[in-house]
Length: 277
Image 1 (cartoon, rainbow, N blue to C red):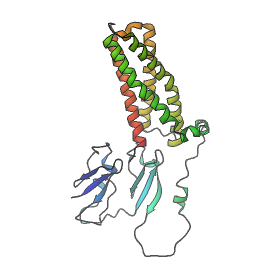
Image 2: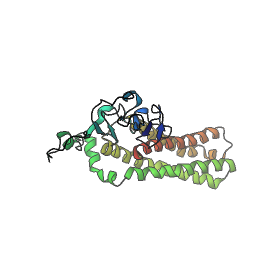
Image 3: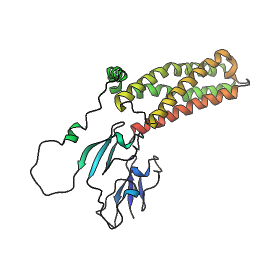
Image 4: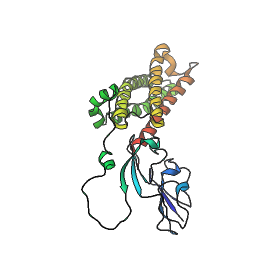
């Protein structure tokens, strides 16, 4: 029986074909490598089952190579890059060849000259747009992990804000209502820093590639900013909303919960870009 290993999270699947989707991280079948085939020890496949060589036949797909996603840095091993990056969703065109794993050959003279492709593989695309130039000046924020630091502030405060709001409504507590209000105001004040450092990271680390992962993160960031502002200003129009008994208290609680959920979705997709193994 064959064994397939997920390159994203390391999950090992036993079966004739890789699963349609990794049950641990959700990576597609193309993210699985064939790591064991007792019936044919010479057969190697680094893509999905549809690209594997038939049983009893050695794959003729050519020498295996390493391909790096120029958006997030994920490295794929295979004769060709994957159709889509399993980490950030970038298309095949965004992969570059960084190393070709040549088949075993007879020893010969060693050349010190590096292949042209390998010599230029680490050179990032030229950054010429005004936004690239602006964010390049703020490269220190990227090196010091400014965005991960900034995003942990609202992500840590929002759960407390929701808890205080829920308890304030349930217990009709003015003290908890005050704590909830100030926490939400603090979230509003932190979100511009989160968005700014996120854009800087997007340009400096990911060359401003608008894949589905970044679209989701941007939509979530905008939604949390707008929702938090609405909730922070709501009490100025309707001071008693935190104490319950209002006609729209249920809607107020739902929007608080939605705000927290959207922030969690943004954190999930941010984790996909960080925890690749």
